[in-house]
Length: 388
Image 1: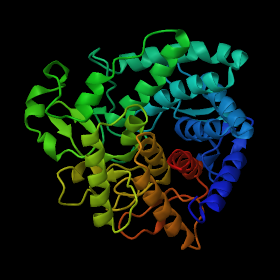
Image 2 (image 1 turned 180 degrees about the vertical axis):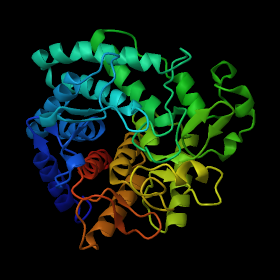
Image 3 (image 1 turned 90 degrees about the vertical axis):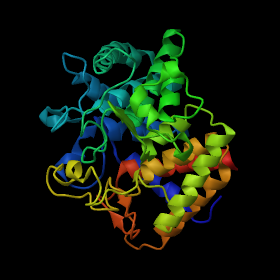
Image 4 (image 1 turned 45 degrees about the vertical axis):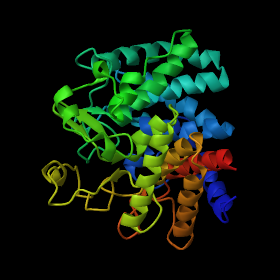
């Protein structure tokens, strides 16, 4: 085990337990109204961490979160982004709805049932999942099997990722395959998705999403799964969460492992540290999509280069990414990333489970006492277990 990791991990589990309430799992223990809500995404990410380590307190928190969210599903089947239960204050999103509230809900419900076999809770959740699946089917817009996410429509709500996104579609794929397993159905055909999100010379012509855009790609330059597709464009930037979800559901070939290892080496050189940012490269004022970034915020601009979504290093996604690497046998990379994270955290006296680490300065940033971050450390633990 990496020196110093056990202490960080034990604190992370304790924080996850502290976040559990009768209504569900809170995003943070801090005294702020938004963090007293049950957030679909945060609660279910924390619950997934609890399920995978068999923590009864967090598993109960996940159940309560799912029931709270299910109770506020709207007539169309959409799951709330967040709920303030005691005031019956429900949000389905601000500028737009949050697609990933729904995909995390499906995954959370199915994984909870698979792990616990809690029939009484599943009796309540099952029809809610079915209704949510119908809503998600409608958000394909073209009935071709992929979710379309609007700008600001998922966790990176102040960052310009939109269209047929890797993150949302990999999350849906995981959840719906669990649903199909429970229902005794055949798994979804994922070849088309994986071939488009990692285009190569071997991509089957009949699987190509947009032939003109595909022809403009240089497959040899692609080092990881790409972030999203739009009409006319395959966006090849790196999305840590999306790549993590893809890695957890597929087995890389030797060429892909070599490319991802090469990408991690490039990141280490550019950041100066073996850590994994949420998105890369950073968007600057010279970038073509700066205009989509600079005005897209609710309270204050946080996406300066290296900060927040824009190159910030989020332990939650880095941990999930490490777990995916470990499942693909990339154990050396896993140990290097996690040992670097531990070194960075241990040298900072103000470490308190902050949302992210700055991608340029390695300063801690964002809110503290975040269940997201504690969950990322649990995912790192799962990765290390596979890598021992």
